[in-house]
Amino acid sequence: MESAEQRMESLIGRWEKEAGYALPRPVILEGDLKRPDLGLTARDTEWVQTHCHAFMNNAASLTFYGNGRDEEPYLSNLNGTRNVLEFCSKTDIREFHHVSTAYVCGTRRGRILESELDVGQEHGNDYEISKFESEQLVRAADFLTDLTVYRPGIIVGDARTGFTTTFHGFYVPLKLVSTLIARTRAVGVSRDELESGVRTAGSHLMRHVLNTTGHEKKNLVPVDWVAAVMSHIYCQSRHHGQTYHLTPRQSVPVAVMQQAIEDSFIKYTSMTSKAAQTSIDFDKFGEYFYEQMLVYRSYWGDDPEFDCANTLAAAPHLPCPEVDAELLQRQCKFAIESNFGWPKPRAAKLNTDVDSCLLPLLNAERNSDVSGSQTAVVGMNVSGNGGGQWQLGIHNGRVVTAEVGISDSCTAIVYLNASCFAELKSGLKTVEQAVNLGSVHIEGAEAHVSQIMHGMQGLISGNRLSQRGKAESACCGDPVSTQV
Image (tube, rainbow, N blue to C red; front, side, top):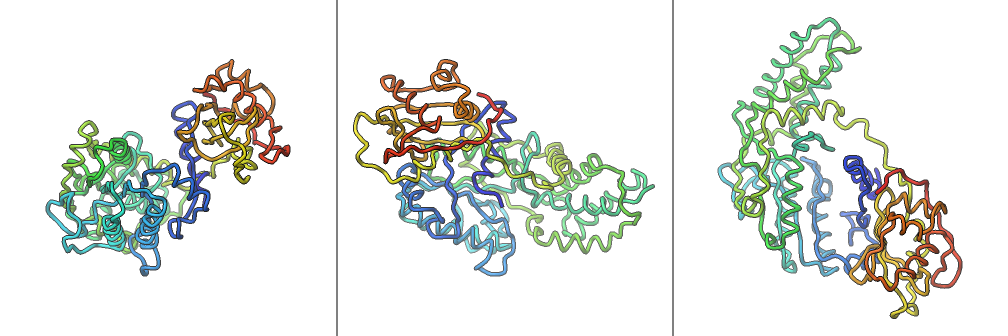
C-alpha cells in the first residue's frame, strides 16, 4: 500500500546503506497499468513523450489461478500489457522490452527454442496463459520497430546473500513446514527426533503429496544474475530484437531442493519454542500441505530444456551461477532469518522532500515570455533521501521555471545531495560556500556559473520569485545524515 516514491525510496535506501554514500533518484511517474493512459496525467504523458524512447514492461501479477478474465492475473498481465502498448503508440515509443516467462511453453517437454512461442501447447495455470497471450499481444504490435523479449526461469533470491522480497514457489514448502513445526514443536522433543520427523515429512510430502520422484529438474535462476543480463542486453542496442531465455545452463533436481530445505530448516530454525505441547499429525498436515501447494504443483513437475543460445551469445561474460545445495541453503537461511518478509518494514520516510520546494514552479503555467539566451536551462540532480532530478530555467539570476527530469537542453547540471540541500535550506551555508567546499558541483556552462549560483541561492532560501513575479516560499524536511 506504499506509493511508488516510497517503494523506490525503500529500494534505493537499502543500497545506499550497502554502498555507504548517497545515490541519485530516477524520475518517478506513478500510474496504474489497469487504466487507460496508465492512469498518468496529461503533463506526465507529455513528459514521457518528450524524454523517453524505450519502455521496459516488467510489471506482472504472480497469481496462478484466477476466477475469470476480469480478475488477476489477466487484469495486469494481459489488459495491463494492452494499455501499455496503447500508451507507447500514443507517446511514439517504438523500442519495447518485454519481460515474459520461460513458462509460456506451458506443459511442453523436450527442448524449447527461444524462437518458439505458439506451437499449440497447453498451459498449467492462468498465470502461464496470461503471460503467453501477453507476449502474443506484444509481438502483434506492428508499430514497434525494436522488440526485445526476456523469458526468465524460476527466480530465487540473490546468489550471494539470498536476499529476496518475494517468497513464492521454491520457498513455499519451507514456509509451510517452518510454520507447522513452530506451532507444534513439543517441549522435551530432542533435536534428533525433530530432525528425523522433518526428514520423514519432507520425503512423504515430496513423493506422495506433490507426486515427485526427486529426479525432476527445475530451472532456478538467481535474481541478481537475471538483472545483470537484462541490464547488459538493454544497454547494448546490438543485442536488441531477440528473445532471451534467462535460464540456467544446468537445472537442479527436486531432490537437491528438498535436501536443501530440510537441511536449512534443521540448521537455521530454533529448536526451542513456547508453543503448546502437541504432536505432529503428518496425515492432517499432508492434507493441509497439499491444499496450499496445489497452486504451485505444476511448477514442481519436470521442466523442459530451455535453449538459451541468444543469451549465451549476448552475455558470455555473465554465466549463470550454479544453483547447487549451498546456494539454495543461502536462500533458505535468508527466508528463515527474515521470517519470510514479515512483518513488513515501515514505509520509507522522505526526510528532505526537494520536490515540495519546487511545487509552485512545477504547477505554474509555462510562461512563453521567459526565453532566449538570457535564460540558462540548468539541471539539478539531488542524490539521497528525498532527492530527484529537475530542470530549472534561470533568468536574470532568478529561477523562473521548473520541470521534472533533466534533458539534453541543459547547459549545465548542478550536483548535490539531500543533506547538503537541507543545510542550504536551513541557512547553515550558502551555495557559494557549498561550491567552494565541493559539496555542490556545477558541471558545464562556465559563463553562467555566477547566475546559476545566484538563482540556486534564491530558490533554496525560499525567497525566489515565481513566473508572475510574486514572492513564494517553500519548505523542506529535516536534514539527512547521508553524505556524498
